Image 1 (tube, one colour):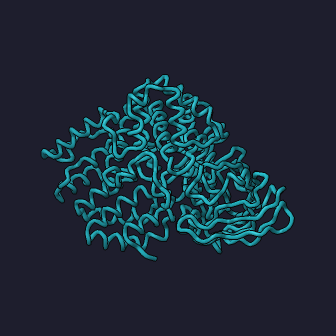
Image 2 (cartoon, helix red, strand yellow):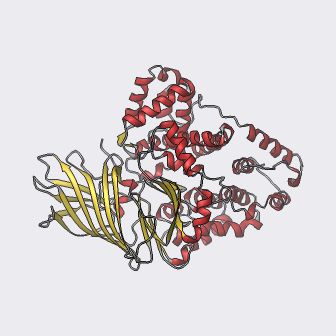
Image 3 (cartoon, rainbow, N blue to C red):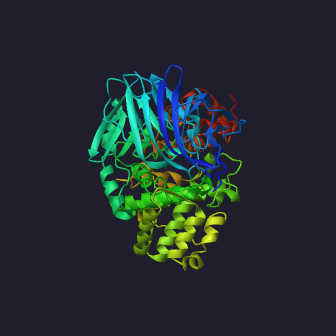
Length: 585
């Protein structure tokens, strides 16, 4: 497969292992050291081509001996520069002495004031989709797998963890050694450094967090072993040894990142009542769909995310029941409808068309939710029992391999030859929008929520609504279905009764703040500014800034807030918001 987002030429020479020896320099905000790259090549190949972006290459040695000649190609937008290393017939290893840029897009350096403890700095990386090349010279394509090891030197008061075998407590030397024996694609390379603590849940699971956050994190994620058990019952053994979660500072740009052995997670899931932990089920599910069987290119992104959403909801169904998982599915369908309405038709196909574009553009709800709907339709068509047997076999037979959409469809059609004629697979994969045979999702709980929305529209005061023991998902559904025009008195009544503006639940608060912007509910504006200043999760930031930017007054407010907030956002987030607000640095 040719990957349009990588300069690598794996048909000539392909990386098999990287051994990192890095020093973390918080003062200069750089990583510096050596990447020892072991590779295989064809007999006639005389070059190894790697991806880099913003790296300063000092020198390169061949097989631990003399220096190699090398060249950096021209800078290409969002792809960086090809690093071409001249090799001999017998060359197996090159040692690259390099340093990252202080502006490396994958790496976020946090000052002590940006952390929960307030005393020590913090670092984390985010390599997906093609940002690994900003901190490690590598073949940065999801279709190329490698093992890795690392020695990382950090300030002695801090602890380092990676997407690998990890320590569970800090040592006195500040030197940490890591090993990842299973082959992974480069986007799963991950490093974090901070004043961390660890709490164990079971023999193979636990949670890391900054010390002031560790007890809340341990409480919130205590059901992780149950999720692992449910996942293994569905689709086979967990193959990565340990499954831990690292709760990061709030500037982390995603809900979670499925780095093998160590999921990175946003602190916005810490609602205090374990109501948002389906995110952990999602990242755990990636241990099969994504980490184990990986999309070959970013055009096949739905193979990672559609499968994972499907698997996540099956895990939550096993743990919390069908009614619960159907609420998740219906909220996801609402997200899909909204996403299709926003995107140009070509970007609503399951198979992406990303040549000449940053693959981060594919990170919409479309591959997640349309992919889920397609897989759910297949399950409902062939029956759950044969479908589960098929998926378990699929993960077993293709473990630690890459998969294209065409490859998956060949496997699917071989098992279920009548499926295509029944559900029109091509319409799902290569057609725009939401096909008419999309599964119908019903939630009895949401029917009752809609009854309360109608009662409110008819004049029932907020204090008289029947909302006792509603879950987060019911509240989101309620807020999404409020009338388009509410008076200030109605907004105030809702807020006085349900305390939305002061909610500690990030999902509920986000939906309420969207309503506040729509209805110019000024009482919530201070909370809106605090929310945008205190967390950097792109899922929340993008809709709020978009909503603000719809009016001149809102745009002015958004830009004033963003001027203060941008320094704490990760590059993944601020690049998106820069475009929305037409921000220039």
